[in-house]
Structures are given as structure tokens and as C-alpha cells.
Image (cartoon, rainbow, N blue to C red; front, side, top):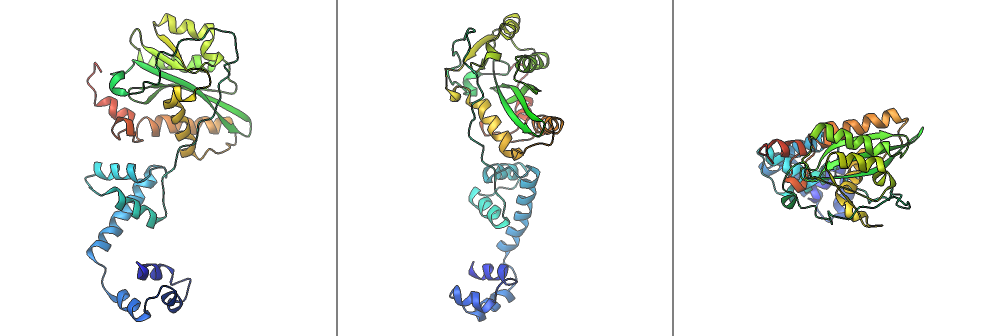
Amino acid sequence: MRYAFIEEQRAQYSVRRMCHLLDVSAAGYYEWRGRPASCRAVANQGLRDIVVRVHRDSRGTYGRTRVRKELKKAGLFVGERRVGRLMKSAGIAGISPRRFRKTTDSDHAVPIAENILGRNFDIEVIGGRNRVWASDITYLQTREGWLYLAVVMDLFSRRVVGWSMKATMHRSLVIDALRYAIRGRRPMRGMLFHSDRGSQYASAEFRAILEANDIQQSMSCKGECWDNAVVESFFGTMKSELGDPIWENRVAARDAIFDYIETWYNRKRLHSTIGYVSPETFESSLPKAA
């Protein structure tokens, strides 16, 4: 490893100086340099190129676990530590999700629903599509001002099934996201819809849509962001993977979010909870009744 380091740095520093500092002989280094590359070294170089490509195709977001899963799908069975070493040698790394940020305005006088969900996010318990949906709002910064995003997620497949973006946090933001989801999914009667206690979700108009579709409403306890942790986590991941930029305008932000949700997250991004496949792949593998 010392000789490999010297080889990498020889254009910047004196070989003899580095050999002295690393307590190796210059003659040994030059002898090592003249040897043909080992089979392992050749294999590592080829594998590193594949690892770099997988990481690039993930938009520079995957860490070693997801990179390894993609390699496995391609028939390459490589240990996670080896993938980690190859990523480190290539100077690439995954992106960690951001912490949750509070956007809820629960200081209102409209009725609050019971927390029926109770942090029960286990997909085995949920048991199928369109049985439990969860929703939340986040904000995106642009040079024109804030853009607000509301999403509706199916907690079984972790697929974003509805979304809406607006310049204000008016109740129409969440109403449009809900209508989008209902139109596309035609949920079963008695389905559970969970959100925080925001005034938008507690509004009479929003509750009327739930009632008209025979959907039960569930709300987080006051000040408990973990009661809606799955959607909060989605927002953190999305912002981290997009780099949380300040977009030039709202149109640019809308385009980026649309591309992230519909092109990347729902269709390609590997999700640990559903066996390291994308939400779309997970749903397509299910029986029609599930």
C-alpha cells in the first residue's frame, strides 16, 4: 500500500523523499513498479470502474450498500467492505439524508383526528397497496421565493402516489396532492390516511374529500415528527440527493422535483425497506390483489 501511495503521488512529490518518510527503500519501490500488476489488482481496477459507473448512474447518491446491491443485480457478488474500499480509492461516497425540519402549523382551532397509525410503518403489518397512505409538506428555496411541495406516499410500497407544488401553503396544496393520488390509485374503502396536525389537513374541505372516499383520517401527536417519519425521511433524502440548492425560479424547482419523483425515486432508486428495489419494481412483483 505504501508503494501504491508513492505511485499515486509521484507527480507531486520526490520519490526519494516519500520513500524516506514512509520508511521504505527507493530500490524496493522501483522493483515493485516494474512488476506486472497482480490478478487482484487488475480485477480491482475493472471492478472500480463498474462501481464508479453505478455511483454515477445513482446521481452520485448511493453508498456502498446500494452500490453492492446494484452489482449483485448485475451478477457481480462483491463484499460490502471491498465496495467501500473501491469507492474510497475512487474518491466517491454516498449522501446521507438531512435531519427533519418542522413545517407544521398546528396552532389552530379545527378538529384533530386520532393517531390511528401510531408509528406502525411495518409493511408486513400494512399488508398491501392502498391500505395506508401518509402525507406531509416541505419547502424549497428559489430566487423567486418559497415553493411548497406536498406528497402522498403509499406506506406499503413507499411509492409517491400523489404530489402538488404551489407558491403558498394554502389548503389546496394538500387537496390537489390527495386528489392526484385518488385519481391514480382508486384506493380501497376504509383506507387510512396519516398526516401531521397542519391546518391544511384539518380543514373542512380536506376532511370532506376523505369522507366522500370512505378514507379514515389519522394525525400525528403534537410536536412528534417521528409519527410521520417515513415521509419526513423521504423529504430529507430528496433534498440531500438534489443538493438542496437555491433554484433560479419556481419553474426550475418544479422540473427538478418532477424528475426526482417520477424518473428517479419511484422507478429506479433502491429502497432498503422493500428489499433494495425501486417502489415501481416492488409493486410490479406483487399479486394484483396485494
